[in-house]
Image (tube, rainbow, N blue to C red; front, side, top):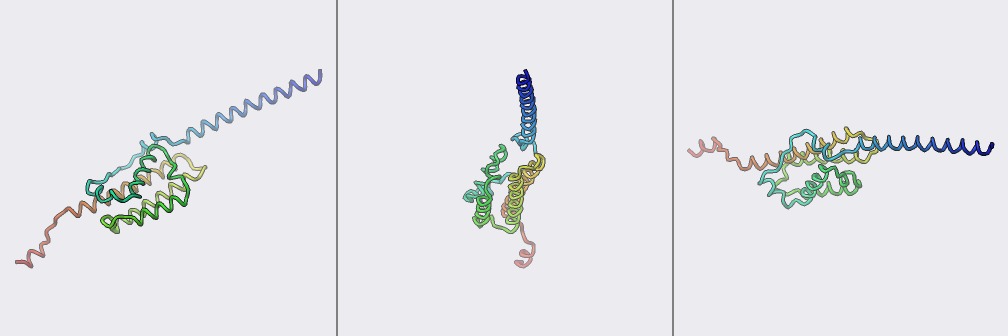
Length: 178
């Protein structure tokens, strides 16, 4: 009788323990789901998104790394972080090529500075995505900062081409000609 009682007690202890583990696993799965970033979360970020004008699009059409970056941003907006959370070496090489291959028609100091700001925000997002302990709000904030930096780059490129199309008469030239 004693071995039967001992066996029954052991069975109860193991059964209770598995229910506790299941409850813990369910709780951690719910926490993971709450921390998962979705495309809807990214879509709900509030910022002004500037797009390139037709002149600006023509100027960057052959800038391969820029076109690749825009494609990766589209993936980012769909909550695909594979490029931004990938290997450090690949990202650093990509950023170097992005800087080195900038078309001459776009390579002004102001645009280069915006590109540096974009790189900074991209690296910050990358480091945040590599950490397992970051909160959802922090990652979303870094995504927003990166998207704002991209939008500011677009705005600066647009301004460059807008200023080039303006014809401003210089009054000093007219007075010299008279």
